[in-house]
Length: 110
Image 1 (cartoon, rainbow, N blue to C red):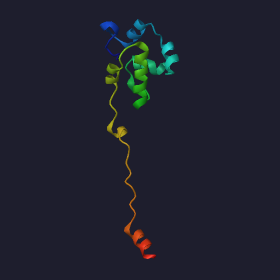
Image 2 (tube, rainbow, N blue to C red; image 1 turned 120 degrees about the vertical axis):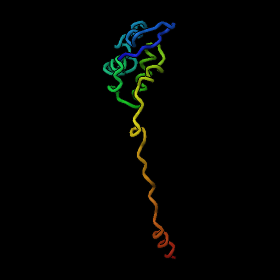
Image 3 (cartoon, rainbow, N blue to C red; image 1 turned 90 degrees about the vertical axis):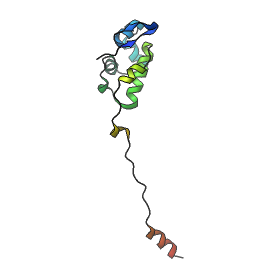
Image 4 (spheres, rainbow, N blue to C red; image 1 turned 60 degrees about the vertical axis):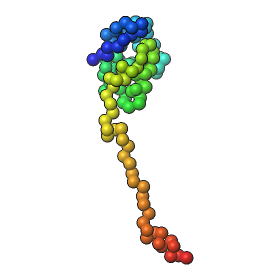
């Protein structure tokens, strides 16, 4: 599932691959400039976002890819699945409360 995006100068492009080719940029060039592996770049082009590392790293990869081909990352980022509620929240630990008994023992030492 490749994303349909408006390319530079308002022309309609059917896929990210077409945008990249129109920009005259190869996957090797993008890999070299961004240090993102080709398998991740192909996953972005093919819309296989589940194959990306996830979280902020995926969003960063998409932004770098979009910058390399000269398009806005926004339509691609909208295609990314929102994070699940469980992964978005860090488990919180309640602060350990000191018992009143410890304070009473401390005060009674006087």
